[in-house]
Length: 306
Image (cartoon, rainbow, N blue to C red):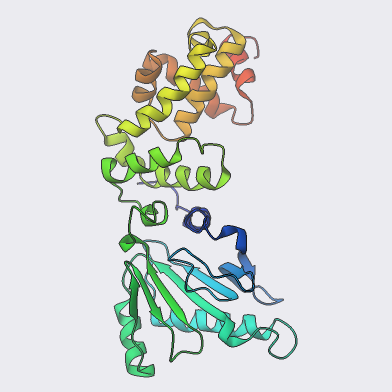
């Protein structure tokens, strides 16, 4: 799928904040929070404002201090992982200062994973006589019997209509059921860094599905058609074809955007009504000079910079 290892955690942190949008004003996000003076980091620490009751299904389990552990789709939440996150919570409580400055009953643990942890849950039944209770689709609680309450979230089992991003943080998406939906949700949010991070990662993780699709999904067509319409009204689209400097810069901008979303050369050429050779030439310049802005690339295209 890719020549390099995918880094799932940054996209997960963005997706998590998107899914908790309703409660976000009352939650403090601290990604890769160091639990001790010596390096020991959790994926996300979420502190909730005192007296506030979270509304979203994912956040209703939260108390004052909430440690989030994320397992990418290729990893498994094991028995050893369970004891590790329990130690995270214990160390967090111990490192917060005076005696019981953070009450143990005000700390929760949430594990977000892609596979149901049967072996780990069997161990908890046998060792602690506790069982996971299904609270919502894809969300399970163990509220009593452990040192700290534990929430298990199977992101692949979450309601895809309610958890649009977190449920699709995978590399096996389908064009119409998943990618089309994400593209619609992404429209109008292209400059939001949270949405941009998770969208770019999902498209990269599902690169083959984008490239293998015979036709682009309707929502992606609409997404880029809107950009093309706006650019065309400003004279940008034809500016690229005609080699006008500012026009070229504008056209290069949305060619760059499509390329970043991993559209194929053929698909970009189809959308802007230009030849594959022309698009390939611009992409080659963008790739060769990644630090240069669109105007500088346009000048190179026109032969104004050597």
